[in-house]
Length: 68
Image: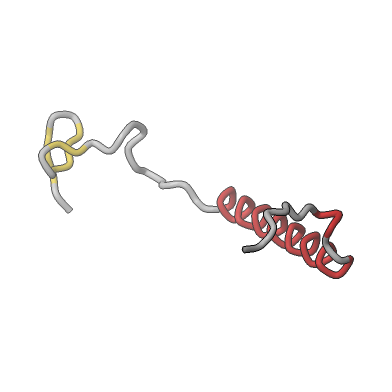
């Protein structure tokens, strides 16, 4: 059996600590990039202002159902 010893960041060698820091920076950069892309994405234009107006699989606006 192995010893049940928790390894903390202080116990890691310097190279492993640098690798963890670099990975954390890459994750933060990726998340920021994804957030920018999401903000730049165009919203639907001319679509319904409320929830999707579907009922029984048909589209409805003003009491009239229509399909595409």
